[in-house]
Image (cartoon, rainbow, N blue to C red; front, side, top):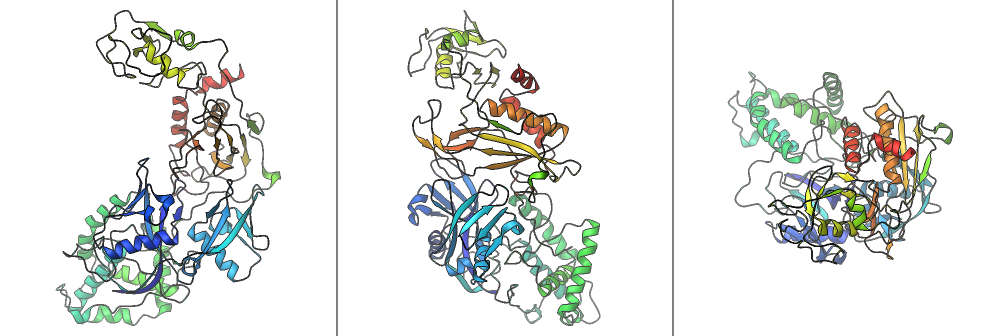
Length: 620
């Protein structure tokens, strides 16, 4: 059993790899559902916050599901010090472009509150991966790169739910604290429980002459975990919940949670049997040797073992402390290292990688133009289709008439090509029984259906085959007006140590939708701008930049639609050309190193009809 005290914060993962906290009211609601029914399967979030009406939280898979869009996002149950901001009901927020207030990530809010309580005049957030300075005198946030200022505020809310007392170390999910599951669950395979079981097995072998049996009185004494601040450490629950940041995780290439669990299950039994210490003549020698080591000895042994394991490339088990910024407590590090060693498991006490979104600060004198690329800034230009061209005249360039249609379906209306078109919308000025074949790809459709599809699109003089996506003409998009800046900075992204970095800054302000947008005349929002993106300054990186400039001119990088992250409609969204927005890490999948990224984005640009030939066309 673990004795602990902590506040519980439920969080969800956004598309930038940031864990965003639910409000205290929502976290209380989720905890209440768990307490009320140990076998609870899902939580209706709208019962706690009407704004979350479309969302369900599935406790078995630990995912949030949006019912109207089908969007699924991971969630987790995190534990924080009761003396920190969430334990006091303090919420720090910043003012977004629409004038409403957005809470900081929990780690950022805790850091700001700690500095506020110490009466610091300001705090630099660079140490936790953000290029911002918080000024408490003006209650403002300053972007160190762009010098843009935003208002911030500190407000009091409910205190997040508190977890205290004894918590079961191993139980199946769902279950509430103190309520045993029935029937008993299989042993947990999380790193903490594997550690405990391994050590118990090792001690049992030594205490019983190698028989492997363990007498109840010979089990390891229970210890109260101590946080770095000296207070009780939040519990690490051995349930089916997704482990929070404070748990031990294997430092290796990113893998899915399912593959990690299956791998641990596969190795747990042989590891426990083969890694145990050999029996000694004295049955209590193993336990006695552990008890005679003091904190200093434990610390020295852990450091020495860590250095050896790092040098040999052995996969390690990082241990992150609760506060997230200080070194791991030497006693905790040493004890954990010795226990893992007793079980024969390789261990190196370290801290998990940090999300690094931005490069170190760069002065204006260090910013250089990119050789071979004209200018350093480009604004959106809206290219219109040539006037006087009717849809029929445009499509005539790309089609060949088919006098004897084959006995197959039109993939637009799903009616047989030998029968009239089944399109029921506004009727184009062509006969519904005419059939045409696209000249490049050879796919056949009702001419009636193609004209209707063209009228529902951008009407820019181009056509894209709905089956194979072959583009006829020059495809353009509906990206709203904005600015694209690009320049060199004297830093390297991971995986490209021999070259500098191309930084692209997109800035699109909110505005009113035009006739080509989903809701003409209605305002649209632009969240998260300016957006910073990064490319290596290599030959292929410059090639990608030149093609991105073509995509920008053709208004293909952004669009107006519904955000898959927030569900907000009428907002600026990415338009199927992936960008790297994480500079110094790749925790979200939107950063470096990524050996295949440049090839992948070239393929995505080609799907939009943008190739090396496009740059020559733009010059012409």
